[in-house]
Amino acid sequence: MKLRSRLIAILAASLGLALFIYVLKQTGLTEIAGRVRSLGAGFLLILAISATRYLSRSLAWQRCMPPTDRNVSFWVLLRARLAGEAIGDLTFGPVVAEPLKLLALGDKLALSSGISSLAVENIAYTISSCFMVMAGAVALLTSVGLAESMRSALTVSLAVVASVVVISLLAIRRRWALGSIVATWLVKRLIGNDARQQWLLAKIKHLRELEEYVFDFYAARPKDFLLVALCEIAFHVAGMCEIFATLRLLGVELSLTTAFLLEAINRAINIAFIFVPALVGVDEASTGLVTEALGFGAAAGVTLAVVRKIRMFCWIAVGLVFLSLSRAQRNKAVATVD
Image (spheres, rainbow, N blue to C red):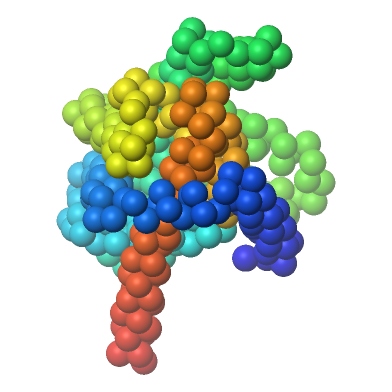
């Protein structure tokens, strides 16, 4: 990670930690600690539910691969996902996590196949998350009394997200190579050095090949597309079930509809604050505000976010173990060749 990126990560983490401490003190540290302890063995249920999220996205990743490259075992993909997301959760999310997943795979998958399959899976995940956010926004607008300013902001946000989804779906459907077209235009406009320009244009050809893979996947592999869509739906359903189980274990009476609303808001928070490591502070503050608005009290939301954080760090620990093992295996392989 470059120095500037490290400084940004440290700053974001520091601000998040400061917000985290402030929210805990305002809500009541003793009350939150007592609620977390009350989970007891119920925390194992939360871990089990959250595990299905990693399983579903790993299966989606496998189905996004070319059929000829599916000799990579599901277990290997799961380990690579956990390893990559462990570092991603601690830093800049997908910017760091996706390359590390490929690094954790080593020579078990061709680099081109790894990049293209991850791109397709991330597009499917992003679009499904946008649908979740839109559904949550509609639910908030129709079922919760909001201030006029909040209602206007939510309506504008809904329109923006909907526009992004529509444009993305049209681009895939009509094979609009927007990424390579824009990149080519920028290079020709901004890069004056001919040698540098040609080098960059050659790199853009790889982007064009990636776009073609994405277009072909959605157009020519309907069975894989359907399975990937079901996996992404399972991911969001598991998130909803985790929220429902956590709050019920904490003694909060809520419906599955409310759990769905909270998960949709959580997706929006993940998208908006992806640069904040582990969403420290941001998750606690925003979830507390939402549960207070829904009538459950801020303490319920803050505790939910804290439990989610504990669960996240459990999986981060597992991911770091897998990352260490993959590095050890890679170093051993290099030593054997030498």
